[in-house]
Image 1 (cartoon, chains in turn cyan, yellow):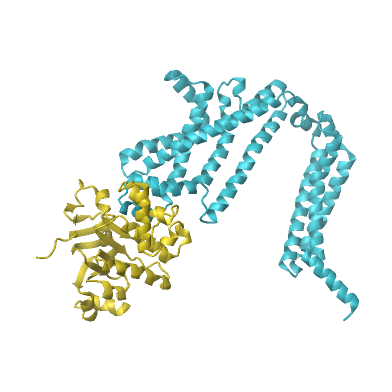
Image 2 (spheres, each protein chain N blue to C red; image 1 turned 120 degrees about the vertical axis):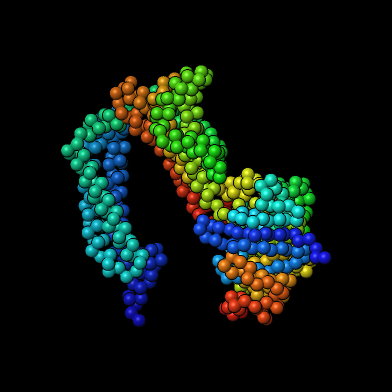
Length: 358
Length: 245
């Protein structure tokens, strides 16, 4: 056999072990990824080199020639990857090569779109004003401690609301599943009321209704905690109800046939199984509640009680600068993103079978 | 004089909406009897079994367990059910509890046994069905046959006066059926009173002391299993047996 031919085959085999079965496919993938990298990381790198504070530096970065060059290069590479990828993916001999080609083309399209949007923003938009209003990080100076405190209050409110809501929700769910209408009706009324009226309405009215009308010695902040728990209770009740109803009927029958009462059967056989199933939806409720705590802005709060959003809104009012909202978004995401990941993880584990999470 | 029946059903009717599932059933179960219930699917045999421990409330008629009338609303059904063991087609073990916990939970919460007594009794019952070594496994780690034997042990641990078996081998792979039937046969030989809804005709013939054939919600034929199998009197019984034997 030809020595050169043998060498070529060995080289190809070595590449294939690394995932490169067809060079043109791998090339398309690399080009697409490179294009997206250029479009996203390029301007970021240039701006970082210029600096973020004061905001004029960011503007300089956006308008610098280097930024224009990397973005144009990214768009070109992206368009190229897309054109080549869609032209050749049908002819790829292996599944892996085909997927690489398609991925490269899609990444290329994303790069071209993002790059174009940036170019439009740079030429037709007003980066100067945008940066002044949204990326004016100078204005945040002195608010760092307040943001940490705001995040703390946000998490605290959501946590108390969720904890109270879960307990209340389980009780309501058991009441609403009663076969007796007189037991069901009040629980159903409660749930429908709290699900049927806006949270912002409940917050507004309960402060006056409870604190003033009933003369309960509750501060606005305490009222908010209570309302979040009452509101979450209604939603958690529906989650628990669905969870309990999803347990096979045979479980209740087995428990009853052993002489357990209805409530004993619920407590030992049904609810422990239902709780496992409702953990993901309850965690989702928690994520929603974290964001909904922002509604306490309608109540008059002391400065130390500010949540993230109230703080941002106050900072905005004081400085007439929207960078505070950007900072608040970062604050919410720092809390919610890990939680969302956790929910997905727990869901996967539960779906994969027997593992107990609790 | 014949002994007092453990279970007595009198004029049982059951409607599910407009569906008339049981149409006037009278039945007595005597001590130490192994009563086998056969019949086509949808004939009402499972419903009949489930009325004995009132998992199905009869629309009409009376159910007695020993001297207690279960259909009397004043009767404490929870207490009565502790004397009536039941085993289900789909096992219905509690999946979040180990085998032994499946048994002890009712011993502790219903019979109020101490933790030690319950453990001891549960492990004895598991040994009884040959599964002592699986005591600490979760049901998902057991085969269908093993799960069903745990379910039998769980019911037996309550020391019931009568055991109800509702097609307990129907959900099992063929090679797992025998181990469950063996346990039931041993139980019958120990003198347990049993009502067995089944499609296992070999078991019915060998272990059953009396057989009833149900179709259309009524008891159509009754007698010694061997007699009925060899010489069925009713046409419906003949047709049914011809189809399955």
